[in-house]
Length: 175
Ligand SMILES: Cc1cc2nc3c(=O)[nH]c(=O)nc-3n(C[C@H](O)[C@H](O)[C@H](O)COP(=O)(O)O)c2cc1C
Image 1 (tube, helix red, strand yellow):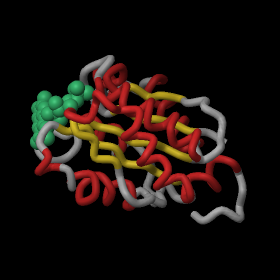
Image 2 (cartoon, helix red, strand yellow):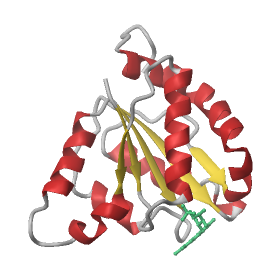
Image 3 (spheres, helix red, strand yellow):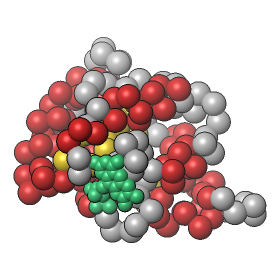
């Protein structure tokens, strides 16, 4: 059973990275699962993603995603959607690569009027890849970062029922 976090920020050590890993740990806790995470920070892969030569780093990251049970997909909000970097990475996945997996969308944003981008832009991308996507996605405002812990904990309780089965291998939990 594995939980993988994808951070789609072109900048390393971002607030999106912190928020995504905290949110993933909160979900694992709420679902009664272990706290082990694999984190794919796409800022490290960025120079290789569009390079014509094959990259073992990129292939390893694709392998982590395709082997995962639950994936938290996080991005800063750029131009009212997610980053191009995230799309370039997800375009590497085979079709229906997320079938049978639970994917949790998270967008960090500055402008409250873009909060629905997590539902109308990031969610359909994950559904297209075949994932089960619990409601709601997490639209995290920069102004909420000073109480990140309580915001992610509240959200984790909402999505935990769907995540629990995937993370603990309990097939009687809803998916
Ligand atoms: C190129 C670019 C485009 C952005 N577009 C939006 C946007 O459309 N809506 C929004 O709410 N924030 C937008 N932002 C702000 C970021 O989403 C916001 O600052 C986020 O917290 C950045 O995450 P980070 O600190 O992990 O880099 C944009 C930032 C950049 C650099």
